[in-house]
Structure formats: C-alpha cells, structure tokens
Amino acid sequence: MTALLCSILCASLVNIGLAFAGRRGWDSRPVLLAAYLASALLAGALLASARPALCWPGPAAAVRALAGDRSPEAGASFAVWFGLVSGALYLLCLRAADKGVRRSGAGLTTMYQRLGILAAALLWGERPTALQWVGLAVTVAALAALWGGELRQALAGPLPVFVLGGAVELTGKTFQMCAAAEYRPLFLFVFFSLCAAAQAAELARARVPLVPGPLVLGAPLGACSLLSSLFLKSALALAAVSLVLVNL
Figure: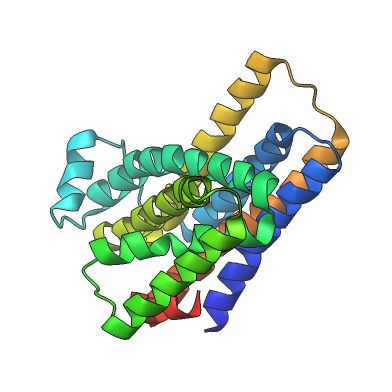
C-alpha cells in the first residue's frame, strides 16, 4: 500500500507542476525537457550502480527475450529496443496529460491517467469481480461528469489519457516479465533519453527560448516521474493488479 500511495503522490506532483507552469504562463516544453533529462540522469546513475552485463543490442536477441530467453544478451537488447518503444508511448501519454491538466486540472487528469492501468490489467490476464466492475463503471461515470462539457466531450476528452496511461503501464509490466530486474535501469535510461532527445528537437524546431524558471521546475518533476514508475512496479509486484485498481 505504501508503494502505491507513493506512486500516486509522485504522479500527482508531476501534473501539479505542469499546472503551475501553465498558471505562470510558461511554455510546458522546456519544463518537460528538464524533466526528461533529470529522469535520464537518475536512471543512468542507477545503471552505473547496478553494473549489469552489457552487449550490443541486437534486434534478434530482443525478440528472443519475448520468447523467454533470460540471457544477458537478450536482457540488454530487450531493455534498449523496448525502451525506445515505451519512450515513444510515454511521450504521447504526457502530451495528452498536459492537455488534460490545462482542460480540467491536475487532480482529475491524474485519476484518469492512473485508472488507465485497467487496460493493462485486462491484458495481463486478471479479471475484476462483478462488484469491482460495478465500482469501476461508477468511477468512470463520475470522472466523466467531473470532466464537464457535453456528453461526447466528457467521454472523448479524457480517453487519450486513459488509453495511453494503460499502454505505458503495460510496457512496464511486459519488461518485468521478459527481462531481469538488473536491466531495468538500462530500460529507463533509454526510455527517458529518447524523450529528452525528442523534446530537444521540438524546442530547436520551434526556437523556444530556454529560461531558468521552467528548467528549474522540470528537474524535480523528472525525479517524481521516475519514482512514480518505480513505486508502481513495486506495488504490482506485491499485490494483484485488481487490488491496486481498487486503491487507485
């Protein structure tokens, strides 16, 4: 329970930080760049501390990891290639969350983002009980009402946050099932490095100036983002997904 609460707290802090940037009139892109860089640096520090066996990341070895190969070559390759895929999904998820924060606030967006784990839970093979299905349906209906606007807007508005949030959680669980835990820092390093590179390219293309305020704000948000992922994985390792869903 403690790990789950810490995950929710860290995710909430990220969205609160984005909301704060919006209220100050700051462009969120430099904030996100600093956040990605901070996350990548922290993941790199974890990688240097863990010192797993590394090798050239071959695509064939990554595919073998999906088939159950737990060799160092397969683990390192899977961490790199799957980190690239997961990073792309995370970029889309955070952009959707940023729009949601500006539309309906940090609290409501965070609830939809964390509820997205439901999609991942179903693909993991867990099936909520009938009572849990009723509770989830009531929760989604309440969140749609809180989102506001016309019915179509209330249903479609948070849908990207819900779907992409579930997709990101699915990638984390997939890595847990296909590679050894010692390669998680490598996975996270590639994951956030891709996000930082994509965000830097976007800033260069748009010629957005880098000012101290957004960069200073983004650094602790990056730490919160990394910690949220680590805490959630710990919660899922200790309890069934259905139990985590009830407490989300």
